[in-house]
Image (cartoon, rainbow, N blue to C red):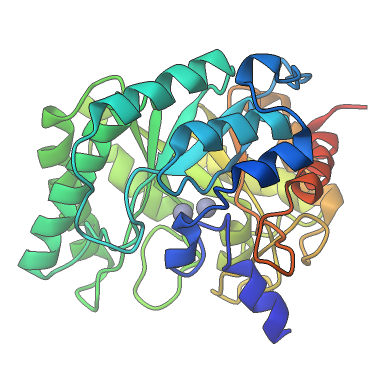
Length: 341
Ligand SMILES: [Zn+2]
Ligand SMILES: [Zn+2]
């Protein structure tokens, strides 16, 4: 089990425990060539055989986001999520418009739409601590600005923890922070609140809490949406493991928030029990969420507008290199889950 848990955090898992390793990526050109025998992006096979749905994965970028886009395309993705900065750091990287523009162009060229940016974990808009709150506002503002340069449609962030100040106080802090951030950031980038497993004082594990934030900012209805992480739903106690229960969870979401506000689903299985408030992503079928329930959830015709992004751990070989062939097969498993018979 320990080994499994370790592997979960190695790569491709931006929503579990913060991990520096998440940023690292196998940059070995030779490895990529040996796996796919193609180095020229113009020779890439067209893998987007699922035109009606957008599906991709979180890609580690290292310092080579264009390479990450290229590999995503080779895996068969037509959507992508990346970090724009160190997910466990406060300091954003230096401005590099050329690198950002090159990524945006590559994503367009490879039909990776939408581009989604996962914000750093340290951001806590609910914090009662002034210093943390100010730093969180600054870093999320920076992330939205960089997201626009990267051609992103969405920035996903964790709603944070009230740190003992109470749910109401935490929600008010988030609302006040968003009132500062949204007017000064690019209107073309939406901010998505990600649901949480609800450990400790963290907010966003119930649909009611997420709705409370959105409903207090009606003037930003076109800038704010929701990202649902399936592993987080399960950890928070939302049973999406059977067709009936998954349907009920969607109905509850629709009543409290509205399905049109849902823009991204993070598709992950989990090793942790329903309602455990713990978060350990596993690959599809390697966790305990029933695949039939997940399938019902993902195939709902009301969710066709929603981009689906895997955040599952990427298998590595004995030399710590990503096994992209393995990941491509896993990606096909995800495609089968969303494909209607
Ligand atoms: Zn996340
Ligand atoms: Zn997630």
